[in-house]
Image 1 (cartoon, rainbow over the protein chains, first blue to last red):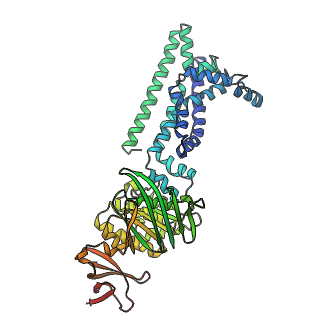
Image 2: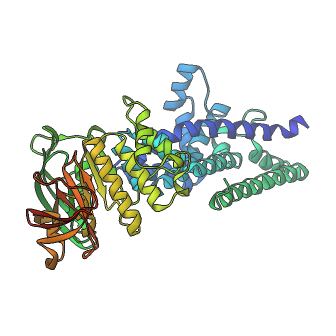
Image 3: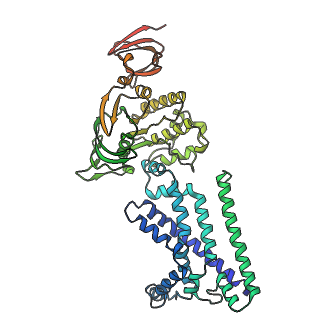
Length: 224
Length: 284
């Protein structure tokens, strides 16, 4: 049973690490994009949103190039930390960070952009810096979008397939996450296991979306 | 003295506008800007606050330069001693009334100032409320209180009482005068309401198409038939600021005049004002 559930444990670990790291990374990124007033703003937004439209295999391919032992990031990691990035859990984390980036950044950024401009201006006239304004005024007023970003990032990471297959392969206990495990079981014609994994992922995805919409509904009715 | 000279090309809903204004305003004065929509009133306030950068010009407040295009001096809003009351109040929904004021309070100022301002504006009961639970008038009070706890040199008000009913507007106008007396702040307000300007301001700037077309005493705004002669009851006397307020029922207006040197006025005195002359008709 433990071996059977191992892909799910690995998926949950990956989703947890990715979501936590992305939350820490998303705030400075939101800061950089929101407060940027120059012509590079659309460029920054396009870069962050790329994984939404890019085929996972394309992203996976480029990541493979960068992360392999003779790629610049792979060799750097090997030299500095003695960590191999391709076909390993740390490599999966890097891939997931990039692939799930828009799911964390975009809901927070668009919610902040929809706040009245006068909140930001009022904070400035009260002598507050940009960071202070973001932290004390803007983010607390888009709390629901932060929660949605966290949940969607977690759920999206659980369902990742293409990028993981490209840079992680299918190593049991190391890179075989739930979605890869389904593919593996189908290839080996183990439809019972494939059915079980697919059913669990289907239920998980449905429950996550249901929670998100129920949360948004309660907030819009002023319950939360 | 506040010296202002501003030039900016603006693109608004009604097309291109060349804003070009210059004025010198004494410290501790209350001045108003009036003019049609799109004439550049809010833009002037935003440039004074540092929220909008002029193309050219100069802003100097009490010998301190806030902006000079030639010398490339530009102080950010955070570096200017300003208070700004926005048309939509801009109260932070995540904070209670007290937290909104505490957030605005400079770190060097004692928190007792919050209690003082709240008492001055009769809003002690509101302090633990969130802004969305307050009425328009209460929200406006909080916005004014939040701006004033910074004890700014220059308080900018963008149509502060526009959305309120007459009764509430008059109460808040009184609150503003009380705050002005207590904190000695220079106030520049944008308004559409001639009566409000007559009551509050020492001088009014009329703006049209981005240019100042008239700088006058607010009395000049009243209908011509009433110019020159006002009569009514004294409803307020302010010795410190050297003015009194007259309720002229014929024009349904509260009017502010400089206190005369030679006459001892009392509340409820019936007086007549004609130009510089003030006559007490009765004081029973």
